[in-house]
Amino acid sequence: MNTILITGAAGFIGAHLAQRLIANGSEVVGLDNLNDYYDPQLKRDRMATLAEGDGFTHIDLDLSDRQGMEKLFQQYQFDAVVNLAAQAGVRYSLINPHSYVDTNLVGFVNILEGCRHSRVKHLVYASSSSVYGANTKMPFSVHDNVDHPVSLYAASKKANELMAHTYSHLFGLPTTGLRFFTVYGPWGRPDMALFLFTKAIIEGQPINVFNNGNMERDFTYIDDIVEGVVRVINKVPEGDFDWHGDAPDPASSYCPYRLYNIGNNKKEQLLRYIQVLEECLGKKADKNFLPLQPGDVPATYADVEGLVRDFDYKPDTSIDTGIERFVRWYRDYFKI
Image 1 (cartoon, rainbow, N blue to C red):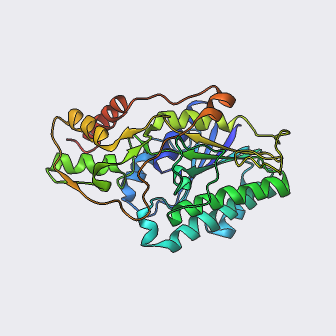
Image 2 (tube, one colour):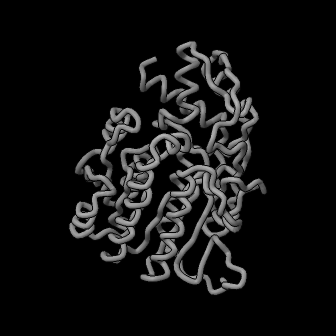
Image 3 (spheres, helix red, strand yellow):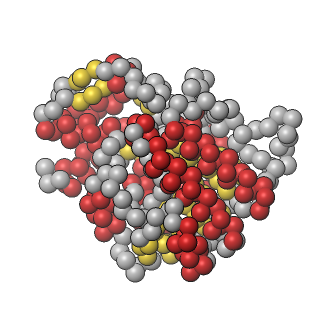
């Protein structure tokens, strides 16, 4: 895969992935409109780590711009497309639902159409652990039904999986959906727990701990996510000849379509996560315990057997290592 389009290239995962692919010798075109969902300066600083012209080209474009997207796919011949651009965040979907439709649905159709008409070899797209919604059987498996989302964000990600399958079926477009589990690490999003907690603890402000601290998450370090994505890009899915419509497996299909979890395959209590952060900062947190928020789920836990089977890969960075690296980056970035 020599020429790769990454949408959301100024985002947390996108910037890390672009850096890795450029180092591997790929030509990366990074699409990002640098919107203000959170501080655009952080996005610009991430982009600054990607040298323009040195295997990287930035395209300032909104995913929902139909004509602009058509021109982009006409201008370049992409071998692979990695769609990481999305309106993220569970709670924000309760406030501004239309932004999720514009980016996660309309934008995704534009990507599918671009891939279809320019014969892209492989579309890899970010789904989310949020699609498991009301499921309680642990660990979450790609072979399980996910028809009970508890946020519009989750519903939009499940919709992406369904839309991708349709294009794999109708047009033979190879697609792979990746359900990411609570990604964290250097250059992370400011609306995510680790960033919020670190800022508050350093400033002596209380942190909000939801579900009265009874939260469990499968925290996955950014480098592990990137490694998984890179391996997936270069393995184009084919039809599964063992798939049967009388017992349909959601993770695969008769057409070139696959789904995988990328998670650490380990549940961690949120309070343990906070404890490690306190140790790294050398400062205790003032905790404000609150009920579970609408749209949130109490626990996530990834079954990664498919990732191990097909790619011989299993994420394994501990939260002790990952949080320490984040804190080191945070202090350096904000000159603390």
